[in-house]
Length: 118
Ligand code: DGP
Image (cartoon, rainbow, N blue to C red):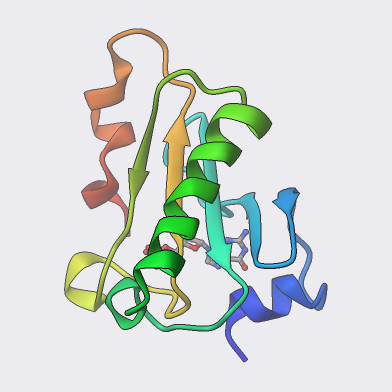
């Protein structure tokens, strides 16, 4: 079972900001922006490029956008996906990072840089 499956099953605590039949979104435990939420498909795939159905890929992006705008109230935000360990992926259950909430001009600071984590 992946860490995120345990969160979906409520076996691990998390701060959930959105959930429907197919997706869950919860706060990242190691935030790298003032708002940092992960949008996760409940159907398990280990990395984004394992999802071959364009409708599923589209639904994931559409859900991330809906969570950012409607549930996190972000006008501007960054969506990021690490695909593979070499790109910084550490949890092998596909997820989209939703990052935002910076003050003007802070979005490109080191704090906001997905590559700066670890
Ligand atoms: P990535 O590097 O793209 O695989 O990002 C995985 C993210 O998952 C990372 O930013 C930290 C977060 N994370 C790992 N374990 C947990 C956990 O148990 N709970 C929560 N809320 N987030 C976690």
